[in-house]
Structures are given as C-alpha cells and as structure tokens.
Amino acid sequence: MKNPTILQFFHWYYPEGGKLWPEATERAQHLADIGVTAVWLPPACKGASGGYSVGYDTYDLFDLGEFDQKGTRATKYGDKEALLQAVSTLREKGVKVLMDVVFNHKIGADEKERVSVRPVDPDNRNNISCEVIEGLAYTRFTFDAREGKYSKFIWDFKCFSGVDYLEDPDMHGVFKIVNDYGDDGWNDEVDDELGNFDYLMGANIEIRNLAVQEELKYWGRWLLENVPCDGFRLDAVKHIPAWFFKDWLEHVREEAAQDLLVIAEYWSPDLEKLQQYIDRVEGKLMLFDVPLHFNFHTASNQGAEYDLTKIFAGTLTAVDPLHSVTIVANHDTQPLQALEAPVEHWFKPLAYALILLREQGVPCVFYPDLFGASYEDEGGDGGMYQIDMPIVAGLETLIKARERFAHGAQTDYFDDANCIAFVRAGIEGAPGCVVVLSNGAENAKTVALGEGFEHKKFRDYLGNREDIPQADEHGNVTLPVKEGSVSVWVLEDVL
Image 1 (cartoon, rainbow, N blue to C red):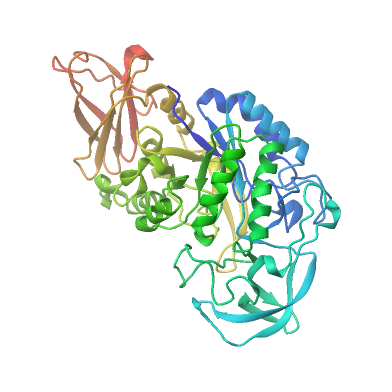
Image 2 (cartoon, rainbow, N blue to C red):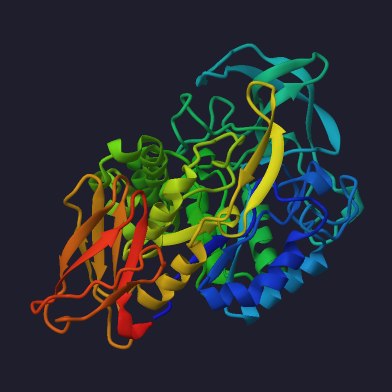
C-alpha cells in the first residue's frame, strides 16, 4: 500500500565540502519513516569545476570521487566511499536510489585539438555556414590521473558535434565540428527550439558515433555494477536524440538484475512535445510534468485571480499519468537559476497537497522545501542577492499523509474557482481522506461520502483547522479551509 514518493536530495547551492553523501546516510532512516520511497541523488561524477561542481559540467563519468582530478579527489558531495555508504544505507532502509545521468556534453578537456568547424547561427541552429574555420578546441579528454582504470576510451573531436569556443583564432559562438558524423547537420529527434536544440553547451557529444554509443552503454553497465542503484534521472534529454535513450535503456535494463525506474528531464511547458518524446522512446521512461509546474508558478503569483479548477489543464498528469512525475520545484527553477520560475511560498502547501495526495502521477519533493536552504548569488542584473528558502509548513506531514491516507478511488469537487476538493475513498486496511484547498478567502466544501459515514466526525490531519465537522445522517459533510490554505480531513477515529 506504500505510495511512491521521490525526494530530490540536493539543490543547486548545496554547500561544498563533501557533506551531502554523509547527510544522506544520516537521514536514511528518517526518510523511510516519513514515507519517502526513493531519492534522486545529484550527478556523482567528477565535474570540470572539481570540488565546486554541482555535477552538470561533466568531465569524467568514471570518477565518482576516486581520482585526483580537477584539483580534488572528492566531488562537491564527497568521495566514492561516502557515496557507496549512502547508497547502501538508503537501500537497507528501503529507500531506492536514482542516479543522475548527464550525457549531453563534456567540459574541462585535458588537451586542445586543431579542428575544422563551421559557424552556426545561434538563433537558428539549422543555419550552418558553408565557411570552414580551423582553430583549437577543447575536445581531447585523456583522464591521465585515472590511467585507464575502468575504461581506456579517449574522447577526441570525433566524439563531439559542436563547441562554443575556439582558440587561434579566438572566437565565441556555436560551431559545428566537421567530422564523419552528420557534418551537414545536427542530430534529429531533438527539440526544435532554435531550429534544432542538439547543441547546448561545452563539447557537445556526437551520439551518431558508434564508439561513443558503446562507451555510454558500457558506462551504464559499469555504474550498475559499482553503484547498485535502482534507476536513473536523465538530464537534458531534449538535446539528445530520443532513439539513443530508447536503445540505451533497453541495453541497461537487459543487464540489470531488476526493473529500473527512469525519469527524464525534457524541460518544456509544451505538452505535445512531452507526448511526442514519450512516443519516440516507446514509453520506456517517465517525464517531469513541466506544464504542471508552470501552472503552480502562475497560480501562486495570481492568487485568488487564478481558477483552481484549471490547475491540471494542459498537463502530462491529466493526459498520461502513468508517465508523469510531478514537481513543485527543482534545482533549475529555484531563485537565481537559469530556469527560475519559483512557486510562491504561500502556495507550496497547496501544490504539494495536489501532487502528494492525488491518484495520478508520482510526486517528487524538493530538498529545500523539506529541509530549508539559504544562499547568496549574483542575479541577472549583476547584483548580489541573499535567498532564503524556508521549510514548507506541513510538508513532512503531507508526505506521511500520502502513505497513510492517499488510497482508493478519487472523486473531484472542482466546481469553484477559488475552492476545490477531492476525496480518496480508501481501501480495505487503509483509510482515505478529503483534501480541501482555497486560494482565496476562508471557504468550505460539502462532499457526499454516503453509506458508512453517517454521523462520522473528522479532523484536519495538518492541524490547520481545529474544527471537528460531523457528517449528517446521509453521510454528507461540510469541511472548511482557511484563507489561502489546505486541510486534509480524515476520520477522527483513525488518528
């Protein structure tokens, strides 16, 4: 009966110094106790910025904090031994582990190579110049400190399709590398933003190179053997051909001794693009419901002007819940980040109730919302900003409520723009609940629970209301909610 609940166990500004892996070990029992069933860990591989790397500037996939590279042995999150201890402890406590996979690019090459490139219009990547320029590019990765341990594969310019910087001459921009793989254009089955969004940053990996495909498949097998995880979060899949991940997942699943949970980040509010991607990979993974996140963002900014009955309009959760992972925030949307679209703090309890207690989708909770975060960084205007992300009130209780009460058939009462509700009927051995939300004034919702609920009394599991409503002789009950708040009503006798 345990409902799946994922926790993104990091954020962009998590402190450096090797603290995250030990923290995961220390919190493993608590996470299991409150109902977290899986954690998504950040990229564990060595990044170009060494001990300061969040993990998305991928340098060496095979260095999990084992080799002295980029000025450090450990990654920002800790060394390999601490990672393995965290994974082992989490799984011992019944919490599955998802590893972050970053395949789109590599950064921090060990050597430069003289390459031939063709300039690309950055606003229309399909517009590739006929002019060929020769220059030095950071495209050769030799990993000297690793000395061929785990893999002897050397990455050179033939493994990449594009770069954003050349030396001799000194040039910045987007440049298509002239090689044996699709010299006339980029990969297909990628997002069509900017014409073709194959290229994102750094040395862009050339998936059409068969040697590259085999190396990435080998790495997938190697990771499963060395870090016994339960699945993956795939980064930036809109920039990588869908056919590759379809093949890659078929390969690693065949090698794994268990089924793997795989969630991909296709960051687009366009529902049709998400559906198209799911079709292209033949439904072999789940996607984050980006449109729903943007609905939360909009609703939190508009307040009572937002029509709550439309909160799931145009979302993946509404049309394909079996492939939907729901989020309120993540490391890219938090303040001062590239995809900043924060959900205002007052609305977060409502948003989390909508992803944690409903039947559709698998919810993913964000670390700062559960544990808090504070950081300082430069904004787009050049100014420095102090950001505080306080713990979301009642979030831990909502996670517990998901495990205890989010069971059974769901009935929606989406009949008021400012006050909605839904009922989870419960199943044998597991009671249900009634969730009431308001984005405006104090309100109430009358629900018909029917036979078996006559004269039953209810309490708000979140403690936001002290009332004890009682159903009438027909099993109908009116359940209140405070202004801009949420209440989770459960039978008094089950508490």
